[in-house]
Amino acid sequence: MSTNFPYLVVPEELHRVFGSPVPGTRIYQKEGPQEETSYWSDAVFKVAGQCVSPGGVSMYAPVSRAAVHKRLKEGKLTGFFFTITHRKRNLFGLDLRTRELALGYIPVSECKAWKAEIEQRAIEKGAVTRAELEGDQPDWHGGFLRWGSRWAKEQAERAKK
Image 1 (cartoon, rainbow, N blue to C red):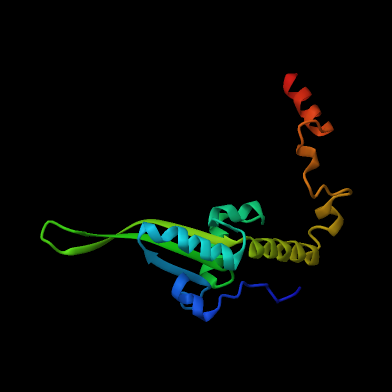
Image 2 (image 1 turned 45 degrees about the horizontal axis):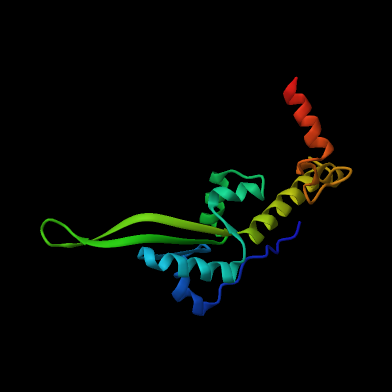
């Protein structure tokens, strides 16, 4: 099995934009006001390309949300997180900083690489073959989902019964 995972490279000069990585991980955390979120998101997408939330990783790899969090904490997955903060004064005039909402993005490229890693591990263990993973005639473009496809018609007929 290949040990070269295609991690996203975040240049040092962009740590000011994304926040410094949490030691021992590839998690970049930034805090700021709501007004900065769109600029931060645009910067993340420009560097990372397509991204999904931690819960959305399962669309690309057969993993649970807990597995995503574990891999993030182990430094085996890149994550960008933005926490919206507000400053306000309490009853005694003290400045307080409250946290409201956290946004999180995981690069899709790493999700797909993780899936390939899982599939390769399963093949090496003998749990599955490449043909079983891909099927006899893989439908990479989802043609079976089109409205008039034979599969869609069969599903509609089954629903009527």
